[in-house]
Length: 194
Image (cartoon, rainbow, N blue to C red; front, side):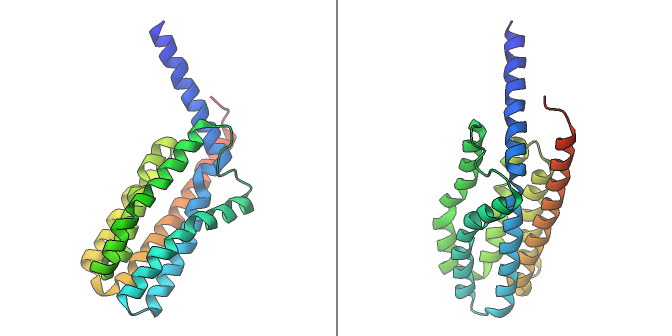
């Protein structure tokens, strides 16, 4: 009886995860918005030579991700809130966790502004890990490991190029993640629901 209840709970959870993935496109709108935002950061890095000004651009520019992702969701005809699915609230909370890093970002902006580009990239990449489970997605696992490692290496090995290299590498890895998510979404559309 207990095993049957566990199996039913597991099946229900899988159904909710599948519904969430279908409604939201596995959050691909956020990843596409991230590609746009990090590409803009790379362009800014080429023109802004003052570390503090560039760091402030990152700190305030990062706030554009959510509204930009809503525009992308609308264009892609996705439901970013997954209305009617309780896991939609969990997805939102996982994204909102980034807000807790604002004091850390502001501290870095004024104490060590030259590290902000790769520092923010590491935070962004690392926060994607729970989405690997939530969406049953290898793309998010790739991004959650790849972005922090790549951004960290840029920060440590290519210090003079950080303003351009860190956001460029992040944008490329997010683009690869978006491609992987598109493939995952395509496969799940062909698979019958659990």
